[in-house]
Length: 508
Image 1 (spheres, one colour):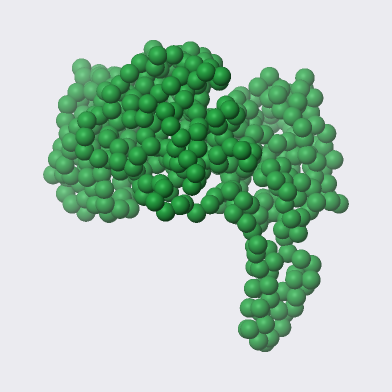
Image 2 (cartoon, rainbow, N blue to C red; image 1 turned 90 degrees about the vertical axis):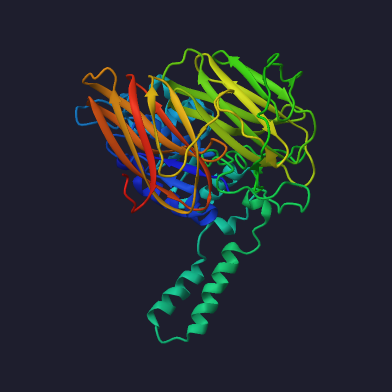
């Protein structure tokens, strides 16, 4: 199911945004419509938080009222001109990351002229807008839903409850003594009318997997939740192209040698993509704005992709890149198969995708956004996969529950540990001491990843001015299995001690 973000300014269009949220939630489901992501906790990087939310959505709906362009802050400055204006960051992030933005005009507002917008929002002024009027609200929302899904939609399904049903439900509420069976029948008729007959194509085109043609279902540790199959409806492929969707297959780590690492011989082109093999890690250094077009050796029904990214100069910076899936003609099938927008020294993302019952001929496009970055890409088409070393060379060290891992860690260095955990809650303790002992900033973090090295969840963060510091975090594990612990130091040389214990036990 696609996911959408409603971007609006409270002083300008809160009522319209709330009403629109209700209607879109009725159609797509409340969990797939996001609003008010500007509630950011103290200490969080608001640009990073907004960016992470925006890139997980298929489209941003920019609700524009009469005061949207001119709204001022307490000092009398236009809010859109402030670099920390959350609405501005939302829309600018979507435009820069290639996320679809749909301007929606409400309350008689006019589309702003590009010349009146800040430079990073100028492209918004050139987009085709959709107007929602009070007198034709339901019909206009119906048009918006058709734009979001890219296909015709029965208008009756976008109007909410039918008037006769609303009146009858009110009668049921007043006549509390009416038989429960009649009330149940009324509600059942509402459910059938509202949700009945929704086809698989209206739910994102998903079809049940074909038995025996794809690997078994992927577990909770098998794929990154940060890439949610954006674009399945907004960038809807034609019937001639394979429909990409998140795979429910189980890709598992198998014993065996690590994949061979090769330098990508060339970047290819959309007409002549560079051939690559399954089960081989390809290293590619791409300049700003450069892309590599890759051809797989055979048609596939499912893929598991592992992609690492690091800045070529080794700095702690914003990593921005994207892996897209194309069809045999080079047309876009899934523009956000894997997306990076992380501030780090390096990052890994994984993604499992299925193409249905019939094997499809697909290509890949690896696009680099800013500065020169290095990528390591490994693509599998079989369920049994060896562990892919991080950044082409790092294999996690084994660690047992309760044992202490100690040593030295340099600025910019990552340490990875492989550990097997059972379902339950764990306490994580990390001590960092500056070496030599100077009173300086201790900056580091500890994160937990799945068995493939993807789906990174931060557990502990250091940002303290001190000689030494201890942080304690809590880790909840939902099922038995292996995991990877990542400890990264960012500022000064330090010694570390790290230990995981079951919750309630002594840390010794």
